[in-house]
Amino acid sequence: MDFGYRLDPGYIVEHLGELSLGLVWTVVLTSIGIVGGTLFGLIGGALRSHRVRTVSPLIAAGVEFIRTTPLFVQIFFLYFGLPDIGLKASGFVVASLALVIWGAAYNVENFRAAIEAVPKEYHEAARALGLRPISIFVLVTLPVTIRLAIPSVTNTSVETLKNSALMLAISFPELTDTAVNLVAVSFRVFEVFITVGVVYLLLTAGLTRAMREIEHRIAWTL
Amino acid sequence: MPTWVGPVAVYMAQGFEATIVLALACSVASVVIGTILGVAMITELSLLRRAVRLYIELWRGLPLIVILFFVFFALPAVGLRLNALSAAGTGLSLWGSAVVADNVRGAIQSIPRSQFEGARALGLGWITTMRLVILPQAVRRLLPPTLNLLTSLIHGTSLAAQLGALELLESARRSIQRLVLDLGQPHSLPIFATVMIVFFAVCYPLILLSRRLERRLHV
Image (cartoon, rainbow over all chains, first blue to last red; front, side, top):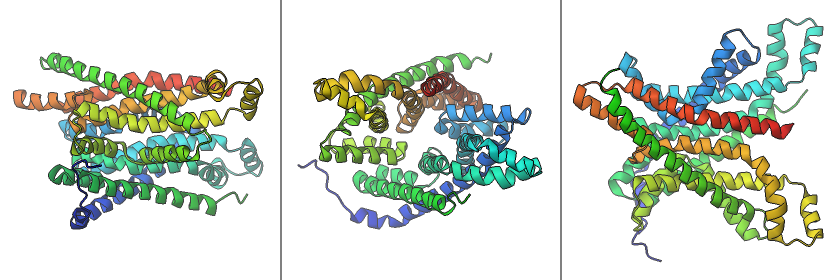
């Protein structure tokens, strides 16, 4: 079959530099998004499940709002809306912030669910041993929570990786933005998108495998 | 109320309408195609199963915006002309159908084996078994994830703005550009905040309904 389109793999070789740089930015953004999102998600999830007055309901409402509105619109709001009231930040800061907020919103729920799944007996036993509440959380609840939360945190992390592609909205030069700009100029759509598609699938597979490795390392030793 | 609000609201209402139409069209396409593919996943034909598995892994594994741009650029390259809205709809349906297919497969496989055996013992054929015994039970379990998918598709329509399709987000962007030209002020904060609130107002009831159905399933 002839669609009047001839593949030119040489095009990718010529533009390997730009694409690699895009990949580096994607990895950087994703890393910031995963680390920040997991950390704030854990703190938020802990506060949420311990029913701290006024703080917990506020976190819950924020999480609901973030999860119920599109990340794509949130990015526009942060980048184009906030400068209206004098809050202007660079593309890198907005991209990182958007990914961290989004990841944290999902991880709050992941960690809250995990904390609530920790058997009550653990808590009771720790109290019977005379541990203070803060020690109970750090020494007993937290280690079990992290083990229980890893599968859902993995999903959120993979989504964070894919969400980094949305930063082309603010022309941040990550992988997808680079790819779209190349295609817009050259129309080498199949070469570019097959390359980028394979890279994303490999990154996703790698990230999933790394998380599973961590899960195995710290598997139930209780 | 400032005078710019009226015209902008009217313009964005048109964008909102396109968002809803796009979301509904993609939902129908995703559910129909996804159900067929999901049922194909539990047939005995291993080649068919493998092909569908590839389809699911491919579209679920890629960022949605990459799929949309791929469809937008690739179809014209092979001689198919699509406007931005249809290209976005095609991309969203590819992704949505992959999600539905995986959900349908999971729901069917969660139906106890004895249901299949019972139907066979009664002399029902494969299609009749599916239609009368398996699918009606699977549908109950499929409702919550399908409502979640609907929410994701509504969220996903905002990506069509990047292709230039005139939906809610794009209508907001164009309004802002217009306001800059006419008044010299963008008013982006209230306009983008409105877009978020509209998405929230549409999606939150769906999410609440999905949670309620999910809870009822576990009782």
